[in-house]
Amino acid sequence: MKRIVLGADHGGYELKNTIKAHLQSRGFEVYDVGTNSAESCDYPIFASHLCQKLQKGEADLGILVCGTGIGMSMAANKHRGIRAACCSDTFSARLTRLHNNANVLCLGARVLGAGLALDLVNEFVDAEFEGDRHVKRLSLIEDIENGKAL
Ligand code: RB5
Image (cartoon, rainbow, N blue to C red; front, side, top):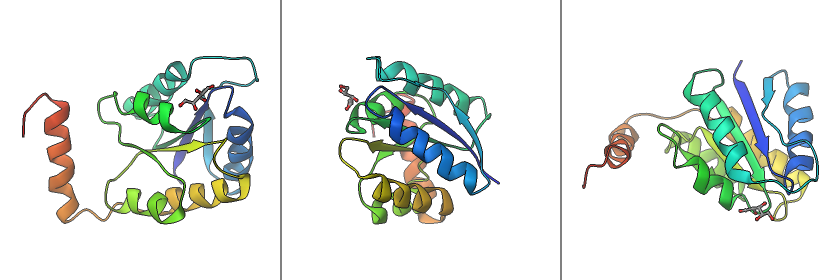
């Protein structure tokens, strides 16, 4: 069973808690790096805590929630080995696992209703990377991460 780590800022913590209850009810092992209140905070800090957990191999997938999902995805994608996708449709949430081997899903709590957000979460956590021709493309992304000009 996959281990899933969740993180949010003040704009996303309520949806993050809804996602947490949903994933726990599905039997996943869930970690929560916060935040846990409506008090204003800085999303890059929570993105970084979540990404460190993935980098250490302590979780398999991450889900980050802020107002739009965009700031979280920008911050998460600055971390080595992190492939974060900000999604608001189920097709993209599934395909980013199948083709991009995304390990972080970013959601906008001010963009999505809870029902759609949980559908996106299900698509993301249930899909598996297809490998094959996509492996080479991901290794090119890794080259960029290592400072190589393509
Ligand atoms: C916080 O007001 C908001 O900027 C944040 O939640 C997020 O939407 C940033 O991308």
